[in-house]
Image 1 (cartoon, rainbow, N blue to C red):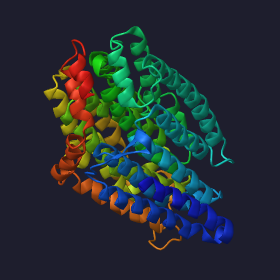
Image 2 (cartoon, rainbow, N blue to C red; image 1 turned 60 degrees about the horizontal axis):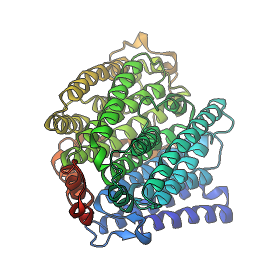
Image 3 (spheres, rainbow, N blue to C red; image 1 turned 180 degrees about the vertical axis):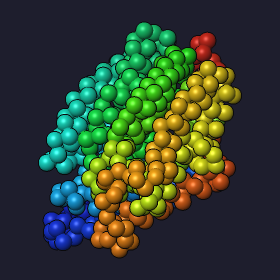
Length: 505
């Protein structure tokens, strides 16, 4: 039902644009947002569904999938609102952009619940190809074209690597495509520790690492973030990343329970590289969008601490962090879009003295950046606390200590931007800010951006205070999902899967 609503909305957007033409561009965006919120309402009514399996066993609408599908849909709804003015000013068609965004949303939602290799691959490609097209959507911008080409080439290579791992699983399981059937086939053939399974794990991890922009599979991220339209990277930084983590958890817990030590080592390595590289390289950036790109890489490293922990608390902390990351990251990108629309630049040095001319934008960007850095009592602080506590309980002491150290590093480059905006003297104001346009709340097309800024700012501010109910929601999405108890049964019997365990599977 939720994906069906999004597809109907997509067809409605295209049909109305064909019939009415460009005069419908403004309210077509609100139609898309209405459809996406309707999909979120449909997801709410599917919570604790007693029969979540559909598409012949290829799709699982369990609570775990529902929470991730909700994150993807909500990030798409916010992205539509912040893209209306941006796309209009770029003099490109809004309806086609929204259609591509809704297509990517459908792909991300299906990825979050897919339990069949064919469904996973088709959903990933639906998400990926739409993302490539959106990245190069502003055809008159050479940077956008370059970003799209790099994204396409690296994405195609990662898809091939992922598909090779999928083909190995298909062969080793005796021609099965559903994840539980693959786990049964591998355990029945006593292939749980074979070299071929390890190779399949490595290749599939590489494909997933590309989606979540984890080092060393991050090469596309800085260039795409800098060159692509800003609303596109806002969606990729949240929606695409959430879908990638949902896929990672579902595959690892269902298919590779006998290789827990191996995949924990792999993702520990990815987490270490992502936290170090993302935070250290971000220090040297002069472009706000590139800084947020390396910040996104670092954030993926923090989230992977919960994945490596491999416990229900770890998975719940991942869900909670992605929920609050949605608001604080999209708040930051909304501020970047507003500033770039008013000034035409995204250089960090040009933000100097912004508080003198636009206190609302300064406050919103400051709160979102401080939350990303983990400053209490904002949402990001509690998100990191839950992740680090889950890692500490799982005895991942080195990973947690590294996370704390790199968090301190990240606070430096976030506060550098805040300091530049707030404490600069009037005579040190940048030329761009000196010529900053007069701020009014009734500018045509800017109202959706202003609404998103206020809503995401409030959510970022109070999500920390409401962290307990939000974490309870995240925890329920894990504890009320049958996938995780089954995985725990397998993990406790790593010495060899006997007949009784196979029957339980």
